[in-house]
Length: 181
Image (cartoon, rainbow, N blue to C red; front, side, top):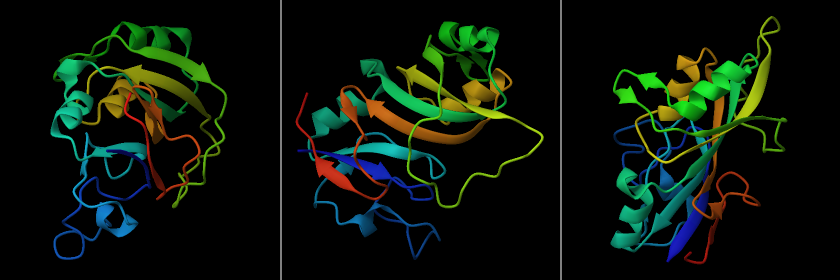
């Protein structure tokens, strides 16, 4: 079984650690089927597609960077990235833990997404824009670090797709069983 879940902003990508150990909500509050586990993680301040499964091999295939499963993110960034910044993302960005693999990166129009709660903080004097970024590795906070390294910090990050699975049609906190691909 594989579940596509639209993880809301502020929710931890785990089932325990809520009331007793952390003030943040966990996956346990969303009525997910028993005996499924996250295949990968999304930071508390990221939102969008989180896959869960009861199949350990599938969980590994999705989550382990060695399998190079493509993950597509929609990132609202501070400023308007120029072609030089997008090219840097496409060729790989030097981070403290080494050069990233090349990514698919493109400027996009503002996507039709759900409202975020709480909304991002806007600054009248600084423009913002959206990019699509597809990566095949999963370093800690990688997309945020990549956009910051090119001079365009991420304001909002939504994982839209993992492999062929997408969050399209799911409101925050909703989930559905999806076919294996």
